[in-house]
Image 1 (cartoon, rainbow, N blue to C red):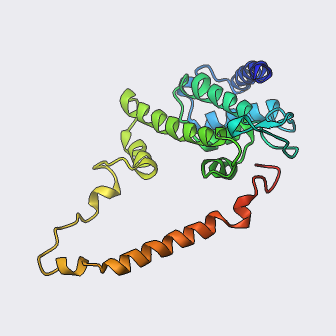
Image 2 (image 1 turned 135 degrees about the vertical axis):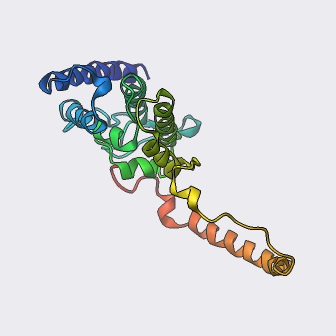
Length: 231
């Protein structure tokens, strides 16, 4: 763990260095006021100079999994602790510091880790460690936080931000299309009997769903912890 911290301190210095170089090359004096698209371009610039073509974020030691069990894993697998440290730099020292949106696309631009892979981590693709799921959940939680902060500071029209929050996190707003959806009405007495379901049918349906789910959980592909080098 100490080695990881030392390496990520180097990452932090390099990231700040190339962020400054990006600003200098593009005559940017104030990161707070640049468009989100320019910010994403800056993240990609940092990736090209810090992570591209390297194995800096990959694991070079066995994985200590759940229950402190040691696993020897294939080459090219990400070191989830390193990725998590870089995520903290992205969230706290970059996006929150300069009032920018946090997103999987932005983190992917910075690290080169594919958005699909990050989503797979969130779906429990990696069975040996909880850290990949924590990375996904942290990204999602702080994305909502960064967007809601923009509503509080009141520096831009809230309609677009609220629409994103509504679509991605279920926020309700009179500014979004959801406000125009037809509201449900109470059922009449004549309609209520239609809701009756035979207990036996309900039990059979429940058992069928359980059986189907069991088949999925026991399927061969879910038994493999690593199906390629990008786990």
